[in-house]
Image (cartoon, rainbow, N blue to C red):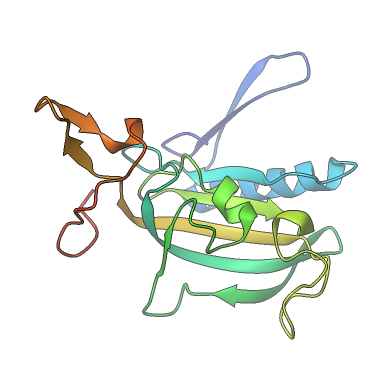
Length: 189
């Protein structure tokens, strides 16, 4: 996925191809179908498949970063999208999470790494990376493969702090995150 409704890819002979779409929606719909095709052509889905729909801006998120997410989740049924089992897209509250905290399914933790603010990504998550054999009563049957469209609306990167010598040190390079949050918990970036 590239800006201005382009997608690029390599074929089996490693030739580079570009496609220009008439609209952002057409480019995203194509990208979703590519991800579904990857899933259907995989003999065993044993890891998270992800496909960027919009790249977003700024630094890619890593473990420890806090995010506010809009999402929709579908069951993967009959080689495509089944019923929606969860969404917050038309709700007032975004999902807040800290990557690496273990508060969401493992497939989200893995699939969202590297996303940027304003980015949208399509994730296809196998059962072992989702709810496994137990499922979620009344919502997700046991051993379900899940599909999510996620959008990062806000990002709070792990804070920078000063080292003992007064030099600025990113907490990404130190073992402990900074204990000092900003006032609302999220920066404009």
